[in-house]
Amino acid sequence: MLRIGIDGRAFASPAAGIRRYVHGLTRALLALGEPLAVVALGGRDSSALPAGAGHVAEPPHPPTNLGWTLVGLPRAARRAAVDIIHAPAYTAPFWSPVPVVLTIHDVSYHRHPRWYPYRRDWARRFFYRRSAHAASHILTVSRFSATEITAAYRIPAERMTVTPLGVDAGFAPADPDLRGELPAGVIPPYLLHVGDLHERRNLAMLVEAVLAARRYCGARPALSLVLAGADLGVGDAVCAIAARADAADAVVRLGPVSEKQLRALYHSAIALAYPSLYEGFGLPLVEAMACGTPVLASNTASMPEVLGDAGILVDPADGQAWARAIIDVVNNEHTRGRLRTTGLRRAADFTWERTARLTLEVYRRILER
Image (cartoon, rainbow, N blue to C red; front, side, top):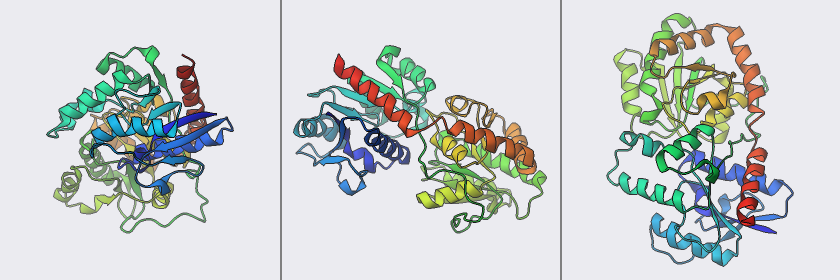
């Protein structure tokens, strides 16, 4: 029986993408039917764990995230008698009683530090780098991220494995007669953006493109952009762009939404608009495709790798090209139908079972050494 210890704090991470990853991976590992057990090491809310996962309470450790990672997590692993530690989100112990597998989703904080102007960000970047070099093996979510990790940390390819993310079964095309209720203030037709409102998401450009496209879309009520995700400091500026154009209704800022609301938003959206400047994977792309929602995305970073030919790829610096793409997807039913078909086909390649099998292969390979 292989005993896998996963950092339990990740199950309640403030980052929605990390929560999705660790929950999806854990459920899929337990469903493989292999002789294994998954134990959450620490974490203050064991009720957040998937069914079938074990839990070990946090042992004494210095009362900081650093203290937890460097002291508490190895102690919890020893207490739980696990064979391997999986640190699913950037940070890992520098020393451990068992091998450590670390997931690095992207290295945007290293490659583009201007997006993270926090007072102690240098310390975080050092911690991330040291964790990467201390780990027995690194998992990452795309070939793009693997090349970026090598460029940032000089880690050779043989120390990394790409394990693309999956999509939960709840993300699927809606029954036209049973569409979920939309959050207050959301009125079709609208474009949807899912994810934290952050500088790298390039939302100012997107709002300008939506404002330009509204003059040619002809839909009533007017086309809007719905933003679903935590505001990390750019929301007011984005809304101000629409207000200055006397079109405050062009942007609807929701903040974080529930899973039920998110699925309803995907199902009723004309398209997902994802003009990000940098992504390690871009899970909303796959969620949208699985729901049958057309996708417009940047032609840079990981987005072409994830989308393939199943979406419209646009230069994130070309606002006019984004406006044209928006006009096309709003006015052209043939374009939307083509993107729905190709998107559903593409999304079928991204399953948590695949992620789990690739991850389990890494665990076994590391232990065989």
